[in-house]
Length: 407
Image: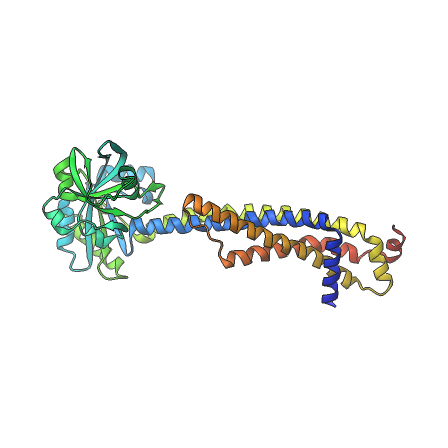
């Protein structure tokens, strides 16, 4: 019986191709929007998490004078007034008392320009650090190497460039072995980072890394450092944080019960911020998707109502020769579902093609996963059934005599 009803539904759609196509087009547009939005938001979230992981590292934590994302404005101002800056001596004390539980990499940063011949890169983030940073964070080198212990010990004039800086200063050649100038000093390029993306709205590809000792020779001792740290044993981040807190409190002679005069930013806090931002961005996709599908439901509902109105006499004849209300209802629902499925498949196919073009143009991973494609088609089918329910009930409820009288 269901097969016969399906044949009747297909025959009806073929008899009215324009009407069916317009309804399917509305569904296709809605499914295209849903698929593209869900895929794009997923790519944004994944990119943000990957960038956060690259910027922050695994099993890492950050020691800083005051963390803006952990404090309100007044509290932040109070911390900046109360908390002393972190210095090289603090980093050395932490490393001395690490007891094998953590690795520490101090970082000093300033903004400046980097040049290579006539080419100039403005507002680069020039970082002075130690070779330990390569063990604390995933630097993500594309070519060359990162800083070595000898570079730091000898204050070597070497530099590792971020992708944007390397592309700008060496557009047609390999930067490795080339020379650049920063702070009036000549540096030899020993490494180039792979493209990192952004984290917290800041590009990670505008960074340059030099030995901290070299940094201090060029610009003097930095007034305040940040110290990246990583647990030496995977999964022991909390123990490493606790030791770092105890060590620094003891060094600063902070009495029990008194607050820390520094902040520790844990991996969970940093990634939690990214997760919250991603959730807020993702929340916008739900109402947009619902609105698009509702618009498609309205169009398909109107199309099916017109179809029922035009076939009133035919429905009356079928009922008069023994057709049941259930058969009429199922046939109309099948018509609506077939329209929605065809539109859904077309919408997913269109979204896949458009996102591939966008991915190539913007170098962003915009891939429609099988789950998203199946979910979009399923949403289209559900929308078709919802849209066809009222017209189907109306068709099934037609009075046979009145329907036969209508031409």
